[in-house]
Length: 236
Length: 236
DNA sequence: TAAATATGACTGACTAGTCAGTCATATTTT
DNA sequence: AAAATATGACTGACTAGTCAGTCATATTTA
Image (tube, rainbow over the protein chains, first blue to last red):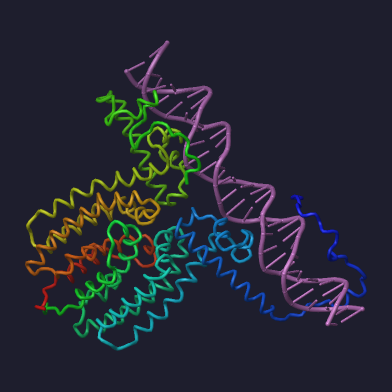
């Protein structure tokens, strides 16, 4: 459909593709298969990042359904069509966003599983990592998105479980098991590491809903939790 | 979201609107027509319930934005327009749904705060109530909706906090305080009753996202949690 | 090196559809 | 019959996704 060109064609400022003398053109047939110019590649990566950043803002402010790609584009200072050069569709953009933000946190937690240190100390370190790397960053918003929308994206939930949660819990279990053997920690925690991570979830959900109504001192709550779990226990 | 806010006559938060003179509609607190013919009132209440039930299905399956009122109507076996005889708009329907489902659970929990029984026993009773009245009912879905969408409905979050959470936590605090004084329970819990309720949140979120991937025995998890919290403790 | 040519990233007007909310009409109740 | 209810076709605001066209930059040719 001819849309309607507003711009008057500039009377051939620069020659449009006139096939011109066939002989000469035929010469350089094949394309050089070289790496794309650095400039373009870099620009491309920047664009992608800008889109993801804008998407994070919009998605966490309005939710997946209500977020408008027009707004994402505006926020990223690009045209809407450009988004589709980088992501197949809205859903893919959403999923890529979560994947991109969540993947990096895995390594850090996993490494902790190895260290052979008193469990309580490890727990306190994990709490610090959580507060600093998740709760005080945009990752908190990403996890909130996961919690809010994950149900409608089973693939995403699976990814999150497989790539993030199960690994963290694996590490956690190792720590807790060692701790339980030394009597530092109740045995039940080994079976339900969720109980160890629960305050992190509470923190994210609570602050999302009631930050103004009833502020929560997340760090202190997590400390209290650790103090309870790792308190010296009587023999049972 | 609502596209255009027209005058939106009549239709309060609940009850069929009296379309009559616009003035009359907004009139008194209580309905003008008290003790309406049984048949009518009953039918009306049924309709309202049917709509709410259908809305719960649709909202929890698709989320607030994606849920279609056409589907709600179909599910309730009524015409779409009928919904608007009972609820002002989609948002009101949503909020009424949450209010209606959540309000009843308050009483039960609050009553527990009074009983003078060992804290652990109370905790186990609360767990039973939670499992039976929340986790094994549709209320679990309602709370999931609250968690997922609450952020975009600050009024609703406030209602939930004021009418539900703060009351439950009040009762919880009373129990925990007594328990702490008797040394049954660590003192930190009094300051952060959230730590007591955390497994409930974990249960709802976890089963929503990972039910298939990694089933969770909620009852046992909650029991483990109670066992940890109420384990005999060494003097500190 | 400069001019000519080719590339593909980028744009945004546009299409095709969706769905909340309305209202003229129909049905039921009194 | 009149009033109260219910219906569902209809409207129009809104938006995901498309694609013909542009233009800055890269590549080739002279």
